[in-house]
Amino acid sequence: MKNQCRAFFMEAKWFNEGYIPTVEEYMKVSITSAAYYVFASISFLTIGNNAASKQVYEWAQTDPILLRATSVIGRFVNDIASHKFEQERGHVASAVECYMKQYGVSEEEAVTELQKQVVNAWKDIIEDYMKSSKLFPSFILDHVLNVARLSDLFYKEEDGYTFADGETKRFITLMLKNPMPI
Image 1 (cartoon, rainbow, N blue to C red):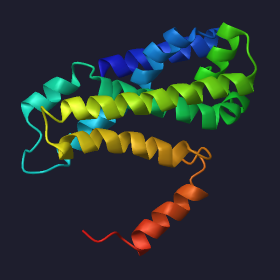
Image 2: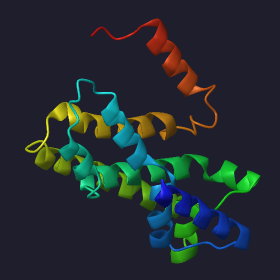
Image 3: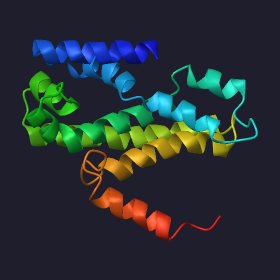
Image 4: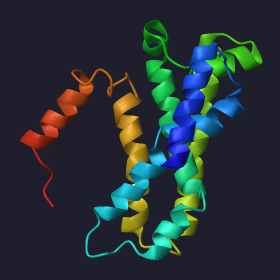
């Protein structure tokens, strides 16, 4: 939680100073502020029957590739989908603006490159999932994977988190009206 507060403070400082960090600086801070590690760790609590052992939480604290890649996906798809609206309303620079400034490229080129990094992060997830499945049961790892899947759901076509009345509302309505059998 302290790291989260530090990240929020740094983003506020950047915004107030009009500072656009490098992509590397941005990612170091924004991965923490986006809280994907927190979401994944909290999701372990929902497993039940104390299935998530102390070892699982210790593993999550080691910054495993699976969690880092999930965070990269979440951060980049969020930024790609929401950066225009966020800049209009006043917000810290997104990965898109950081990339544009650092490499002197257009918005379209920055988005294309960030999308490539999302694809690479999915590859990292698959690879680390396979390695980590030797240490933990798949139902533990699936909780981390599902955080990445949710990011894809919310941000693939639009900013479905901020503007939840579109596809997000339709998806949730479908899930509630037609729940999947267990």
